[in-house]
Image 1 (tube, helix red, strand yellow):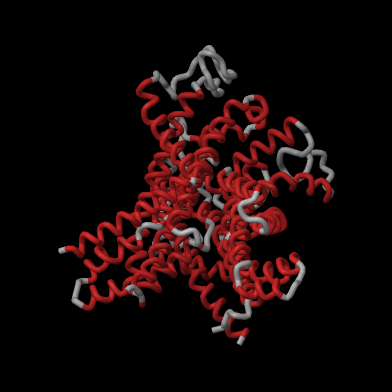
Image 2 (cartoon, chains in turn yellow, brown):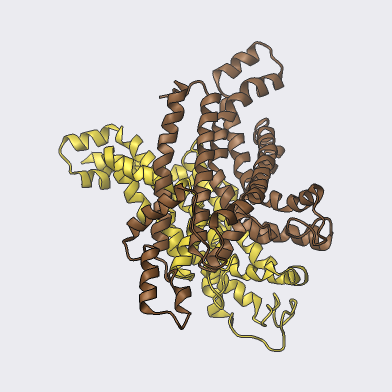
Length: 292
Length: 318
């Protein structure tokens, strides 16, 4: 009877230790705060303020920041502050959803490869190698052009092609967990493969996934914005941080209207920076020696 | 033994090549629109004529058979013809390969020359001001998308200061000199090198720190060798080994980055051709570029593996 209780205490103290270490990491906390604040802003601000990212103000085309438009307007008179907020919604949504897709595909495949080894391992890890040895942005561009660019196609394509980082990490972790005695004893008493994986292997292989989740989200946000910048991502009139910079490919807009492209660009940098700070802190808290 | 190792690496590269090209071909075959669409626009075209052309191109057969037909002609140096310009894809690519190689190659060199010393510098005094500054810089470098970096640099150095051209590879005057090419190369090269520098600095730093804790470093210090002699001769030499792999692994992202960078700077290379082809749904060109990139990446990976083997005698050539 006392055995499970003791186990619980140990688990709690491990979690506590990690959280304490994370708290001490000031940059990680700062990153987390900015990230949460950003999500709150893009979700709730449009409900409080009257923001319309689609309507044109015919009195102000390409207008610099003023009282009516605090970040100015674009070349067809749309309010850039509204577009920045709605663009943030799109960019953060694509980043989070596509990472979830990668996670859902990558974790089971990594588990299978690490648990069953042999032919399963060879096939899954070879395919992962093929994906990793090719510039993903090129493959993503090709796929999106085939599917037709939209928020959903971009999310799915980035998500599907991102499975390798999760699969490889889980695979490596499973290999090391498989060496542990508790896995061996679970199998010795005849626990089915499914339960061994779910009860003993997964919980122990999972914590480092949090790090990959953060870094993958950051890189998905950059990929989405690059695609949208090239005109192959989120399509106007829908706003995204990347497609707000698309117009700046014209040297006139670039040189005369910095208010058009500077804020969304900075928004991407701040977002990715804060996510990476957090991820870095999580890595240090879990295992400073880990190389991801 | 070494010969065997090389052969093995090449044997691994071959299925990877087939994997990538097959994947690209199948994706492309799912694409809406067919090569016959252009013919359909002609009002005089008859159903028989369409059928004949479709058979000629092998479009009536399953995609996997089409892939092998495509592969056969590719191995004979034929990548087909562009839907839009009707020129040979192979010619279109070879025309632009040099320009892209110049950009990617110089970015690779600049990246190595900047990142490795910066990483060593940061590792020489961990948790000092210099360590934090280089760490912070590399974070910002990783977080800045290359297109935004490019726009910023154009805005500062081309538009406001007027020091450097904003794009292209030559001025519009018609005179083409190497000095001019170099001036045009500076900004895109910095942008392309930038992202890699961020992650390489961190790798170099952590690899260096790890090596410096090894016993043989202690031995070298105990012998009374000069600090920099220990750092460079014993530390750096070993710390570089894993970094070589990381640099090699960055080549795909370098090529991917070139697609975006070329677009920002109007750099007329493979990347720009790719974006144009994608916008025009010019599938033979997209497929051709995909294959060329795949080959380039695989060759570089092969070279990395071999360099790694040379640097680290502990690698067994099995």
